[in-house]
Length: 389
Image (cartoon, rainbow, N blue to C red; front, side):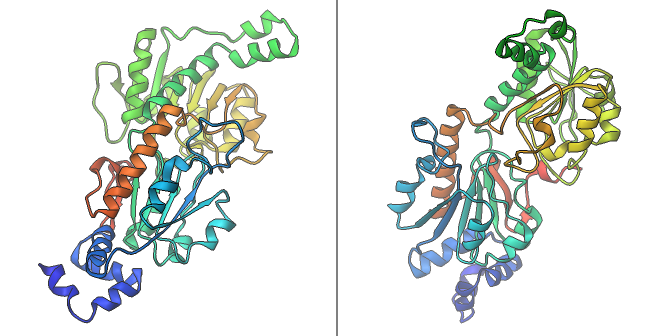
């Protein structure tokens, strides 16, 4: 009743006028921007909102793709039939900036992100909700979002299987020196000594998993039949399970034949795999990264690959994204890099569409989000993944 008694006084008009005033009231009464938005709608009638989404450009003939400007994960009819304005962008810089002043919701995928920095958030007075169409919300300044009472949610679990499978594929590609074998097949060569000089079986190897959440555990489950020793480090999950043993970070780095990264990008993991950490990995070891490119120092990795301390690197994440044409990871030796698409299987895209529509439906109907999807709500960062030290 506290909120009901408050909003019926004259100050309610001020609440309607500015999202920043909304934040003041919401923070004082410990309610979320979603609740405040819905309460206003009930009193004033449903309000049409402006939803801005960033998707990759569609390509003629590629009709299966859901995450593009043409299909837009089914959001065009879904939103327009509800009377909302829906704007689709392909430029995450200038075009996005044009809409900051009056957008209510912004949607983008980790593969092609709308970078919501503190500066952009401060220029978006109406912004109430940031939706990640996938998993990983590090493209949002979470502290700034919490300070301005902007909700941040994602479709947790939507692409975990896809990413886990991709990581296992990358490990096999590196250990079997697939890139060199494929190059020879394509270029008309047949040099068995050159390709065979660095070919290994996966079995009996020690595989280190950095980050043992949903994806890390799925990777361990899929690696177990290869008869490998699996160990993991995670500041939140420090328990052994049937497939993996918890070790400290230093042991993980120094004793693993290959390390695969499955942690979110946070202030603690940003640039964590720098020269110091990479040089402590075993000579001739391998590194896979399907998490976030910025976790690994760009130039330090190239230096240690050239020195053959690190035997190979594979992954699909870069910094920045999209990666420029002259990014050094495109041409560094013994790499199995791809564009960021490990979580973009058609099955994952279907789950992402379903999840984004569920989030929007809950928002429009004043229903709580699923706990698993919430990153920022009610003025605080609530996801342990982004607060772990």
